[in-house]
Amino acid sequence: MMRRAFVVLIAFAFHLLRAAPAQAHKPSDAYLTLNAPADRSSAASTSTSTSTSASTSAPALELDGRWDIALRDLTYAMHLDANDDGNLTWGELRTHRAQLEAYAFAHLTVAAGDRPCQTIPGELRIVPHSDGNYAVLLFRLACDRAPGAASSGSTAAADIHVNYSIFFDIDPQHHGLLRFRNPEGERAAIFTAAAPSQRFAWTAPPPAQSFRDAVAEGVGHIASGIDHLLFLLALLLPSVLRREGRTWRPVSDFRAAFRDVLGIVTAFTVAHSITLSLAALDVVRLPSRVVESGIAASVVLAALNNLVPVLRGERWAAAFALGLLHGFGFSAVLVDLGLARAELVRVLLGFNLGVELGQCAVVAAFLPLAYAARAKPLYHRMALLGGSAAIAAIAVVWLVERAFIAT
Image (cartoon, rainbow, N blue to C red; front, side):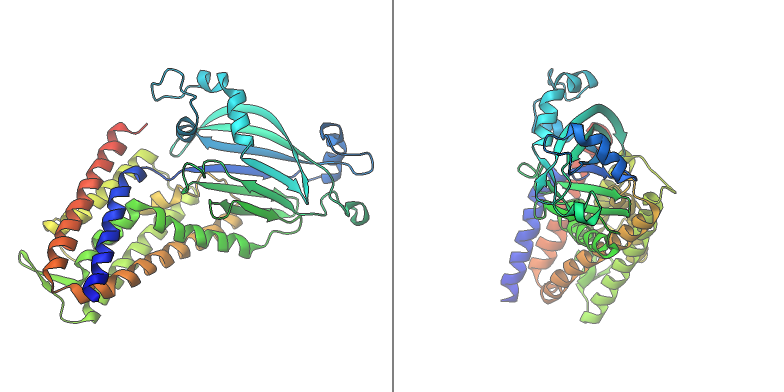
């Protein structure tokens, strides 16, 4: 039974390896900001004429919107690159502006209570982000005053309901990162294929909700971040063995394997937490190409070290050194959202916790099976040698793509 379970685990690992090349770059993210004016009543009176459904007895509410969408994602989803040279220019984007706005706003609906808001497109721009150029759609949302607002004296008695669905049909791993700001405060939220709709209240935003969303995103980042997952797997594969010269021998007891894994995971956690925080708080910033290439190189190094001893000494020290790079990779999910410091700290803590929970889940699934199979040729030949060779080969492809090909 244990042998069969381990074969299933190896098969799952190789399934990840086959899928890995498609995940070579930073996951697909878009950044959405909805900003309510500080003076709601003033904004409401000026926006009545722009809302198709507002009445004189129920003035409208306006929200300012900004949506940053990666050009590479738009190129993949729509045929905007007229000359097919792989480079979407400002001229091509401007020519297809109407098509772009129709596509984007068909996948974003906002309602005040149960009343849909009218979307009024504004400027179109291109801006650089940490991982490339993004199209920026500026827009306004004109919303009817919610039922019951007259009695409460507020133009926003009901919640704002946001439904976000862009790219989910072609990339289920896409994330929409939202910054929702109202006169009471700020809240971050994350839209995924599994959670495309969220509501936001016109009261002080609940800090616990942002924290929970960030924890879930951290877990999901480990589950869908193939490069980070393979890096962790490359570090875990030798944990149930010890090297004697050029030979690997099974460890004598489970506690030895557990101590090795604990040291590796702890070192990796501390390292990526340091650089994740520094990058997200804008203390240290590295170019995306450098970070992504460095992550690919770290995966190559970790896998090759299982075949030929490249990194001498304690493996936890290597995990710490290489984990510093991965922290910059994790920060790419947060750095471009532009959250206020208090909210950013909350999200950082939640994201870090989620990453650790994801890593612990991988360890909990892997270590008992690996320990049970450690003395079998299947583990040494297929898992350690074969798996490490496959991981190294895929990471070399990533390294070439990220360092020399990616735009």
